Each structure stands twice: as C-alpha cells, then as structure tokens.
Length: 385
Ligand SMILES: *Cc1c(COP(=O)(O)O)cnc(C)c1O
Image (cartoon, rainbow, N blue to C red; front, side):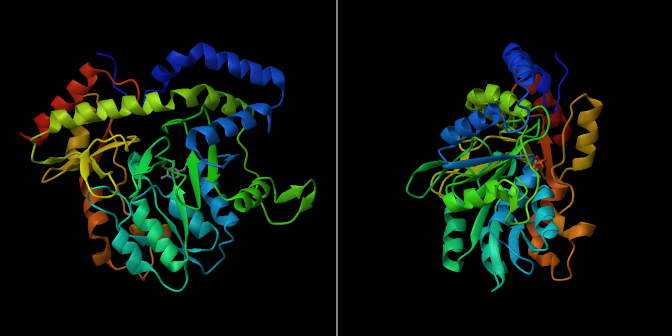
C-alpha cells in the first residue's frame, strides 16, 4: 500500500507536472513577475468559472478577508458576527481592524454558523456577518441573506474551504459558494481545494463599486499612480502562482469529484456504526438532509466520534501510519486572544462539544481504495472494541 498522507500534493502534481513546469519556466522567462498577464488571465478564468463579475487576486486568504472588510468601510466599534468553530484567520482580521468580533455557535449537523444564534447576537452596532463554508459545505445562505436584508448587514463569505462548491437556493438556483454574499474571500494555500505552490488568495464580488474600491486597497490605496486616496495594503498574487493556478483551475471540478468519491466510500464503510457520525449537509433548498451530496467539496472529511476517547483514536491512527487532524481543538471564544467577558458558555454548547468529538481523516485527490479500506477498518476496529 502507498504511504497514506493527510494531503497528497506530490501525487496531484505528478499528473500535471509537464504543464506546470513549462508554464512556470515561461513565467520566469517573461520577467513579468508582478501583475503580469498570467494574473489577469487567471482572474478572468476564475470569474468565468464562478459566474461572478469580479475576482481580485491577492496575497493570501487572510488578506482577502481583511481587504473585503476594509472595502466595505467597516470601522472600529462595528460588530461582526462569525462562527466560534472555524480557523482563527476569520476572527483575527476582524480584531486586527479594530472591529468587534461577535462569536456565535454552530449547527451540530453541518458544523456551519447557526442561523438562530446569528439572530440572537444582532445589536444596533452589528454591521456584518461572516459565514464560513466550513470543511467545504455551504452555510445556510438563504437564511443568512434574509437576516442581512432585514437588518441591513453585509455578508462576507469566507470561502477558503469551499471553492468549487455549490449552494442550492430556495428557488432551486445552483450558485457557486462565494458568489452569494456581498463579497467573499478565498485562499490558494497549497492544501486548499484549489491550491497554488506558495501563498495566494482572492476576493470575489458582483458589486462594481466595491470591486473598484478593493482594487485600489490591494495596491496601496492607489486609484491613479502615486495618488493614495485611501489607506491600503500591498497584497498581490504573483505571476508564478497565477500560472500554476491556471493549470489547476480546469481540473477543479474533477478534484472536487475525487474528494466526494473518497467521502462517499468513507461514509459507506461507517454506515451502521453507532458511535460514528458521518458528515451530512442541508442541500436542497435548506430542507433535505442528504448524505454526501454534490454541494459538498470536502475540504475536510470530518467525523464526530461519540462516547469515544477521540485523542486516543488520533494516537491509534498515527501509530498505524494514518495521519489525521483535529479541526478545531479549541473554540475561538476560549482562545486567549479572543476571549471576552460578554461570552456565556451556555451559548456555545455545540462548539464546546464538537471540539471534543471531531476528527478529520485523510482527504485529497489521490486516495485509492486500498488506503480508504485500511483507514476505515482501523477506525472501526478502535471505536467498536
Ligand atoms: C485557510 C483559511 C483561511 C486563510 O487562508 P490563508 O491563505 O492561509 O491566509 C481563512 N479562513 C479559513 C476558513 C481557512 O480555512
């Protein structure tokens, strides 16, 4: 059996090696390293793929979130509601801009931000909601957009884990995640579903004025050369990364299909095991719970293990040469940097439970049946012994 990896970047590279190597060499030969034609081409191709009017490439997914919030003109004192159960980047940029993060609990089935918890957290100072399409499953965007409309709030989708995923609206329209809110961010970190070979990120929006504002912010606040109208940042995707992303974008749907395929096999093997909860999601107009539907792009395949010593399971898998991850082991509201006297433990019962139960299995485009069978057998042996 091939060695199991949490993410197999080498195996994926082997399939596109010649094309990538040639295009990287071409990018070097071109010497247009910054803002070169490759970056503009990639931008156009991603706009077409997503069906969104504007893609603004930038340096990484954390910058993308920060710049989106700057573009919306959020100011100190404004409250931004986001999920307690996510990667810290989401809350970090809110705090960094002097805005007030308001963390709320998540749904135990989808792991995504809890819509009722959003409603409860709204105050006159609330300005924005940041749903995360966690692990590759779209958040409940219909309900979130309804709340935003009702209270005149911005919605910033953190799509770092969801690129290529779809969300089915209540009108049965299938929209790509990251094209539904006012603005969205994504990351091209190597292990993300569309990863480059370094750092990269992008902002998406259908709003022409906001896109214009953001294009200036990423470039030192310049709209005309050496005229700095707003305080900006320097955040760029370089041409070498763009050329790699151009080679990978046409494969994205296939990559996501391979992830779903692996997820389906995992879930089938775990069927009927009482102590294992496999990932599920709401997909059809927010009504039906389906197993492993085509809305999920499985950035992670995350189980809940009930009445089981999760950390002992992690150790057992590692001892059997199976890497795994715990995303995320500590709720953000309990992190030193983001703790706040206003928080009440009773409002975080789901996240507090999930951090003890979740375990993410190897998930990438190169998993084979032998590996999947070995992983599921090893997990089942442990939880049923
Ligand atoms: C990866 C990630 C980010 C940050 O992306 P970087 O490119 O690493 O800065 C933000 N939010 C979520 C949910 C992520 O998974």
